[in-house]
Image 1 (cartoon, rainbow, N blue to C red):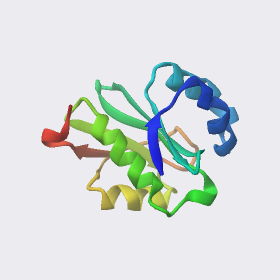
Image 2 (cartoon, one colour):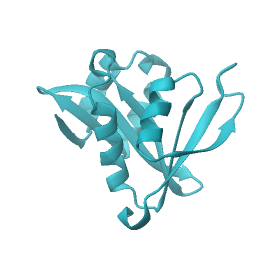
Image 3 (cartoon, helix red, strand yellow):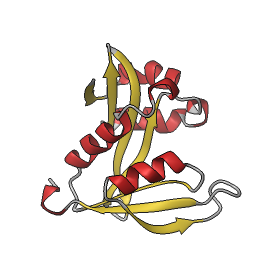
Amino acid sequence: MLIRDATLTDRDAIVAIDHLAHERIDFIERALRSRSCLVAERDGQVVAYGVLEYTFFEHGFVSMLYVAQAERRHGIGRALMEALASRCRTRKLFTSTNESNRPMHQLLKTMGYIPSGIIENLAPGDPEVVYFHDLGERAV
């Protein structure tokens, strides 16, 4: 597996793996243009992507982690989260996920992230849980 900076040419590959891409195409294109997106490749094919931004109170925030359905539970999400964390310029790194996304909650807990709050009303009936990780001296 290769994790690398995403480029504008990765747009179609990202859209092909993300079943909700039609709802977030502007977000994907903005992340690609701002160079805040990483992709994971297996055998030359994009199988996951992640976005690290600094729009959450000027702290690092992983605003997207998406692994293609067929590639889940093989360590790709963990590797991509580690790559994003290694590039984070702030000591504090946040991310969030829907309350219903049990696999992501488990991944974050095993990586040392701790719950940091809940945001209601983003997805009806499925609150967003915010997580925090102190990167300490790892921050760039």
